Amino acid sequence: MKKKNIITKKSFAFLNKYINNPSPTGFEKEGQKIWLDYIKPYIDDYWVDNYGTVVGIINPEAKYRVVIEAHADEIAWFVHYITPDGFIYLRRNGGSDHQIAPSKKVLIHTDKGIVDAVFGWPAIHTRSNKTEKAPKPDNIFLDCGANTKEEVEAMGVHVGCVVTYPDEFMVLNKNKYVGRALDNRMGGFMIAEVARLLKENKIELPFGLYITNSVQEEIGLRGAQMIAERIQPDVAIVTDVCHDTQTPMLDKIVQGDIVGGNGPVLTYGPAVQNNLLDLVIKTADKAKIPFQRAAASRSTGTDTDAFAYSNKGVPSCLISLPLRYMHTTVEMTHKDDVENCIRLIYETLQKIEDQQDFRYFS
Ligand SMILES: [Zn+2]
Image (tube, rainbow, N blue to C red; front, side, top):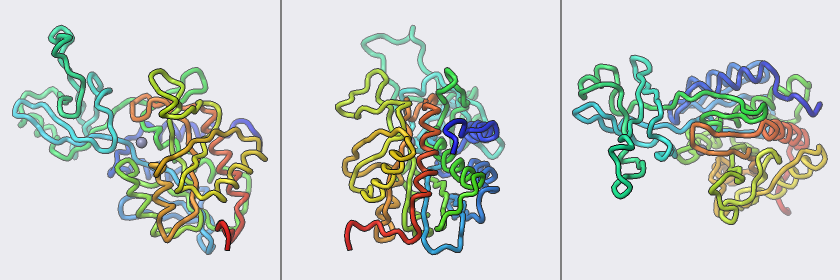
């Protein structure tokens, strides 16, 4: 395979559309439809489960099943309390960041369509050094231009409506992708690109490939838990984001030393099956794909754990994309890392044999 230009004009257009579409946790279906439409030409069959996880399948009749996986959901907020004078308090849907909220525009999703609103904040003139408060979940609020609770409700807003940010995808300095929820829709993009490359390069895999875009990762790996039971895979290669730790105020002693642009990150940890990890590393070495290493503690905190500990134990590994400013609206990643993650998953799949036994001994 050529080293350059994995991402084509067409796939870049898909990426833009996919990232700009809101896909809040629990409400991922519109994003899932965009994703499925894109991969349909590259798969033989697909499943949609009860909560919206989508699986594109190549060789559905094969007994041995290999998963490549990402998560489809984006962190968001829920309308939680509307005050008599029309202000709206929120609950988190996933790990939304209260520190970045003040002064941001938002979209409230209602049955009547999108209602625009803003996170208001007391003017600097009205605060004093001694008394000013930091933004916290219980003091940030939305203003949708209404003066009463009745006015808010007349716009279609009610408790339980989901709130997302309108920030859109952009490219900085030709090689940095910036946008909301690159965590982890960049992963959905990467596994879709692997499916496309397999088809375009006429690669025949000896096993069934389950290209899985799970819902509800951000609230505890829930979509992956559900779909792992349905697929009952023999191997799972999971992709998610990790922290690029080169930006200000991060402590490398605590967070590790990961450099955006230096390649995919391979995680060591109890949930990662070492023979599978070795295969990924040998593949990277042979294909001259740069990679970095990270260590997890008790768990990886990603869908890797959900697959690993399902079905009496599924050999699983984690290939991560370094990301700056996780869970802000300006998450940033390096194009080279995106392409190298795609390349590494694509190459690794071609090294897995039908019925491969990953056990340490037998
Ligand atoms: Zn996340």
